[in-house]
Amino acid sequence: MKNTTAVAHSNIALIKYWGKSNQHLNIPAVDSISITLKELYTKTTIKKLEDSESDSFFLDNKPANEKQSEKVRKFLELISLKKEFNSALRFDSENNFPTGAGLASSASGFAALTLAATNSVGLDLTPSELSELARQGSGSAARSVFGGFVHMHRGKDKNGKDAVAEQLFDENYWDLRLLILVTSTKEKDIGSTEGMNLTASTSPYYNSWIQSTNNDIDEMKNAIVQKDFEKVGELAEFSCLKMHSLAMSANPGIIYWNEYTVKLISKVRELRKKGFEVFFTIDAGPQVKVLCFPSDVEKVQNEFKNTSGIQQIITTSIGPSAYIVGENN
Ligand code: PMV
Image (cartoon, rainbow, N blue to C red):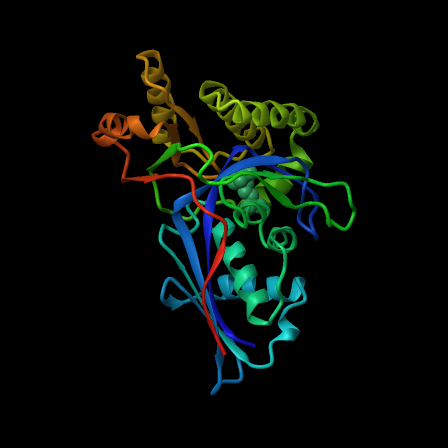
């Protein structure tokens, strides 16, 4: 094995995924479309430990807790990689953004881990093969293997062979910006897998969600091909609100928002009425993410700078595919 460091960028879905058709293989019940985020990434290093019998796990330069370590261990077993390593290992994973607060650390985290681990044992996989493995760690991780605009397929194969992401356009296709309005950095109360499973088993709207998503995918693909910003934004808001109302319709209902989330949604819509070209999307957390053009970033940042409830604004452009930073024997 070699010591390897890999980087993968986070992503945000413009058309959301919520629900799994196979929990064990982590096959999504619907397709999704995302953009990869340049300023948010995870860097993961896997190193041989010569003088230890057991593996050690570090997250953001601190020893990982049992739950976090177990996630990595289980994932490597699941994708049958653990047995390929002939030594004890040290895993170091660093996020340049708050972990677990709806900023998709699992997407970049599992994509970086998949690339680092496969490279470390000498496997040279295609991006599509990497995506299939990363999916088993987290559905959105399958998309973080690719940069730019990415389409994740739910696939048809019962073993999930075609439940992989595909790049629609790379990061240079269309220069857009996303402003992440961070309203809380607390870990969420209910993780996305648990939330999805509860929704699938209790929401009366779940089947309609599954049936209506294909159309959203087709429309979003067309809007991206035509670089129709307004259409992309409208579809992103529609998919976001549909996903959150679906989660709210679970029993007990799941609410990822806080009071500021709702205020910021209104503010984005008010700005639009004033002529700003801004649209929002929100993942399984309370942060509001605002999509805009690069030339409007300053103007939009100024609008939100003094709004109460915003702890931090992270501005990002569209980012690249996952890559290897360094390797040595
Ligand atoms: O990557 P997962 O399986 O934890 O799911 C993430 C789901 C959302 O972020 C809420 C939506 C999406 O498509 O990314």
